[in-house]
Amino acid sequence: VPSCVTYDGHVWRLARGVTADRSSLSAGGRLYTDLGTGAASSRDVYERRDSPGTIFVEDDGGTMVGFTLVTRTFEGGRYALAAARGLEHFGEWPTLPASLAEPAAADGSPTFTAGAADDLGVTVYPLAGRSADGGFAIAPGTSSADPAAGNPNWTWWEPYSE
Image (cartoon, rainbow, N blue to C red; front, side, top):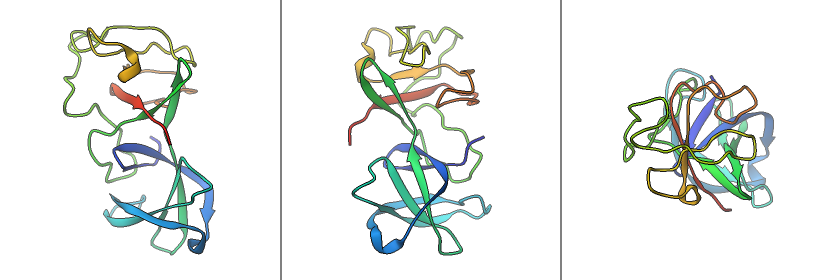
């Protein structure tokens, strides 16, 4: 299970070895996570203007730890993994947003319908009766090369621009 946090409604994966000096960062918002310690707390989020798609959170030892946005591409657009709720502990998997019903069948129905493949060749599942450009789901069980690899849940991806 990847080490992830939730910030601004999206999932961010730990970028091992990516750190920054606090003086080079600007304060953003806040998130709630344990950063792998087992004890979740509210933490400040920092950003660097020259590094969109990366956020930093100070760990208990004072190190600014980097996280990268979990994204995929589809038909030339960038889509970010949306979070149903905050991932308070490392090792939690993202789930579908509460506004979306869990599919009753493996083919995504009745919530989703199978669509085209994204740039990795993974089938995207837009909401039934809608196009994928407004967002789509990805079924569980994707390959190890996929941004959602290993997740046993359906995931939701929404258009993202920086």
